[in-house]
Image (cartoon, helix red, strand yellow):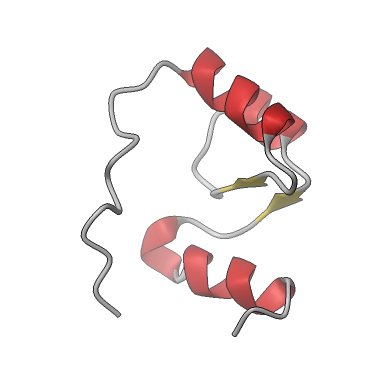
Length: 63
């Protein structure tokens, strides 16, 4: 799967991640996220390099 914007959020401060996760309808944090982001998320998946995105999509029945 080609995901050209995979790193689009790189460089955003972690407190912004928490705000986005709290605002989103369903917040998903990657396994390597900071503890605050994981706590704010509805679901924590594996690291992106361990197929975390695919696992999250499968968890929510999207693939």
